Image (tube, rainbow, N blue to C red; front, side, top):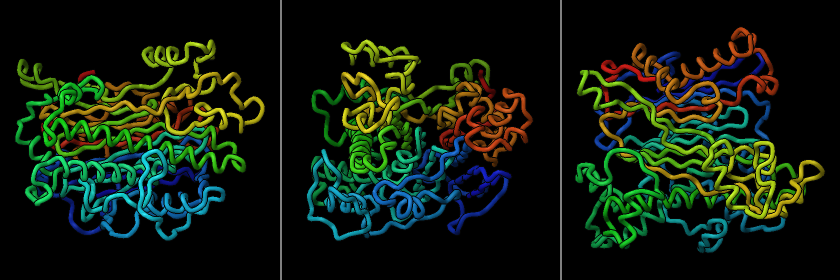
Length: 527
């Protein structure tokens, strides 16, 4: 395992972390420029072999979260998302952080007090903040005896990774904040718990559907049963590849009532669970904003793009709001058969939600036919290029817009909401052709196309099989930014945060090396 943080002369903060599957059971091993390479077979259920993450800030924004009396900053983030290296976290029967947060919110509607309190009576309302009635943490498939976690902050961005080799899953997330760090901080502190909550509900739902589950017929639970069913189906349905939830074989197969315990039904419900988790996070965040906006009206403009990747067995689920991307590097098998060596190509797994995307632009205009100024100056209501995001309440609710003063307020807010919270959801079935996945904020793709990013990562892996490709890609980006600005690398890095934003954005990224393909020495990169 690898964990490293680098401080620049002006105090700037760069994060680099890595994880190697089947590392020793002891603590983290600090290795400056390479990820520890240890022998051992990959776990039966694992389709990834290692990952690395890196982040660099350009914005001057500090950790400014004080919503909910500072509980996100003071109680959640230091214990959950602050470390730069991976560390083991044992599961605990005690209250989760999100349970503490939500129960305290329910205890006081007029004056928020988010210190731990006595749980409220069990109840659950899907349209409001979650209650203490969520299923036990040891029921759902994301729960495990122990997990590995790492993360960090870069300006207004956050990057996060949680994995469990034993159960064969990996959670990665990038939260690209804007107009402040509050929304990104909130997501980093709560979204993973939110997803656990939703998958626990799904676990209970599947237990009711699977015949004999109540009698313990499937000793490892319905999630394990669904996973085994998917493995034994030889990947025949759905085929290896990528499809969108709204136009997929999963949706077509479930319209007429699928077999409750079928792998397709499980995947469909998993995508729904991810969407519900984000919707719940949106409700929770905007509720807090409404409670605090009298003292902090700036909160109504704070928002965050969201990119989540969940690798479960051979299924890679992606959810995104905004302009961050997940890019798959995969071998061209047809070319491999003809020439004896496969070429690597880039496939974007996520949609881009900006006004520059013609499909998104058309959708926004059609959603507001009575507003002649939906898009002004290349931005939604003249304010925002992204068309989907969490938070940014002043473009979603009139009362939040009214909290702003003067030119900050949006004039003629005719038909809110203008920014959507409906994510793009996709499922990719990992095949033997797939090599790695790059998950990155838009700051990465300001300088590199999908193909260039794949080319750089692949060439680095060829020459440094045990190295840190995420950190390398970040270093290449800084070099290119310096060249574009006419500076040396040292001159660019000595520019204080805030002023440096003129030359590059905050950048966060994760590179996931897929264990299904180990042929790095036989491939050439396609550009």
